[in-house]
Length: 245
Image (tube, rainbow, N blue to C red):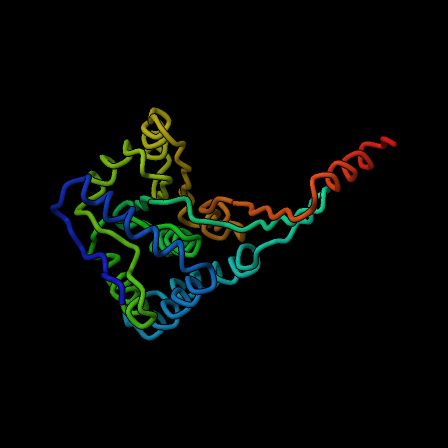
């Protein structure tokens, strides 16, 4: 069994980032099907936990079903010169998932589950409010013999301090619109890679959390091209495609 990423509230920002980056590589490498199996196990175990809203389990199931439709199978795309192109997906990297105190646990679970099934590692705040969710996720990972791709910090201020790190590929936030503006300014001022920013501020209707394509905001696409056709053959096909004789 792989080493589990433990709760580490007092370590430096660099160590947390390194932990999350190290956790991302094996988690992303196991593939969509195995990640779906872990999250299905997580959802199933949550149903037996007292004190956890049944909707938390249901929202995980929902986004796993959508991920199965959207990203589970690579897409074959024949090329114009006879090559084979296979389109698949990959996690973006390290995500920060933030939620204001007493905000929607369902929205938080939706963002978290999409980040994980997409192939990302996650850094979150170690709160009593979400402790049961992560305890059960740890059980699911242990049963599947994979390391839990989640790292913990002591509060949202630490997460905010991590926004400037180039390793952070994206941010998920559950809370109010004013905070979204503040975080968006910080993210926009970053140098290095552009970080995607996914927010849920409608805590009644949960518009973002109910988005059937939400998982697509947590992934990136990659194409593998295989060409075994002779160069001359390719040239002929290209010429025919251009209408040349």
